[in-house]
Image 1 (cartoon, rainbow, N blue to C red):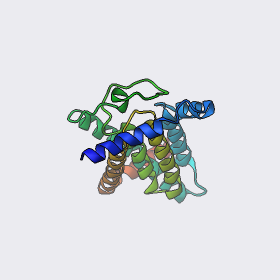
Image 2: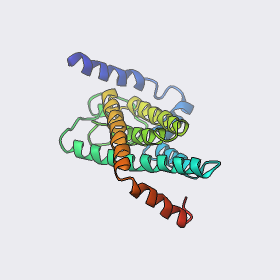
Image 3: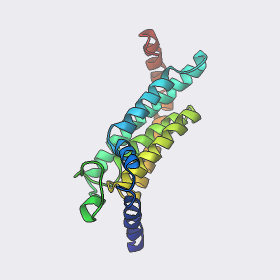
Length: 196
């Protein structure tokens, strides 16, 4: 177990050494590590997928994928909130001299909420539209990597968060199949209001 924790720490320290070397990369890192930039990109991407499709069946499939991704995102956030009540892990910034492009959060590092919600959205989309989901998987991976390099999370925090997000998305997909008339009615209602 100690070897695993050492590897976790060594990865953060190694990635963190790149901060402050190239101003343009630091600026890009600042954008990517923030709590807003990548979530906004994911949101705008999901909004585009919601309305994209050359025919009605394609649009409906995309809308179901976005609905699944959005619900998964919410439940992944709830799962992390509940887990944070029982598990607390200090952020790497609290223990090591690390460069940071953002503020220093004080909540638990484990599991990584950013990874949980972004991977949940990605998996939800991927189950209905693989290409759209892969774009969000890429954003989720990039966001997670930058947050590790900034000392906000250990790699194991991100791994746990990502696994939680993917698992929650699978459960949401199953639940939506079990309550099937409800998702169809929601999409019909959205079409009646010209929202879909």
